[in-house]
Image 1: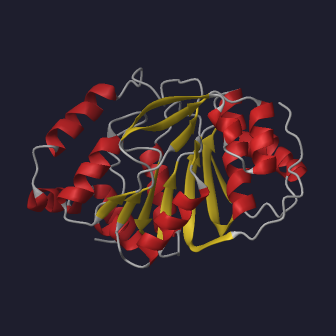
Image 2: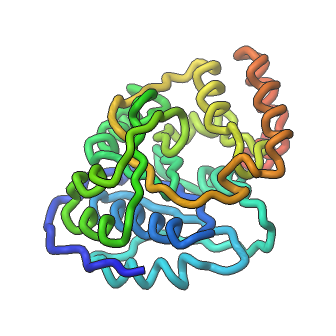
Image 3: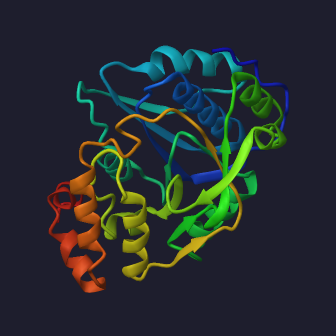
Length: 282
């Protein structure tokens, strides 16, 4: 894997200082490693913000392989709070990891951020401002429909993108595809907690993205969208990111059950969840 050093593209960073990007990771492939490096470098180069990366694995691939590359290509401090939790479990319980980071964050806004995702610069700023000024409680910073650009990137492509912040390098290797409810959401942190956080009954790959949207809209929170593209850096998929997940049957049963609930039933259901009691002392 070879990245070129980011060029001297001096620019004022966009102020997202009241946001914390929470990024759960397990680096299972070389393309996922490249994606983690790319998205982390992009956030560090362009935003004055807070970044927490929590890695759960048998060893820290981020520390061993990603961090040295970031130090080499960036001309700024690697101001990332990297937390490593050793685990030999094949399952990556993303919902649990996200909840731990939400509760530990101390900014008004938390951004549930997939390590394979990039947005147009304006989308980050618009989503942040909307939540900061209480126009929305939750923002999906991409449209629903044909708004996903699936990026088949290489080291050269992402190097040129990071050096120039010119999205044409991503566009050239992208296919247009549908977008839905995943990837990234900007949350008012207290709304995230009050609304039940992430549902830990979902394990590994699951319909948790659909459930999250259903729940926060059904509970009556002001959920908005920005009708612009989301760039998804493609990667190989294992049991933690595809239908081969061994917990898929129980995950689908959980989703089917939740879809039958109205606002009051959802409130009651989530108040009774053991993980909620653990995190917020209910």
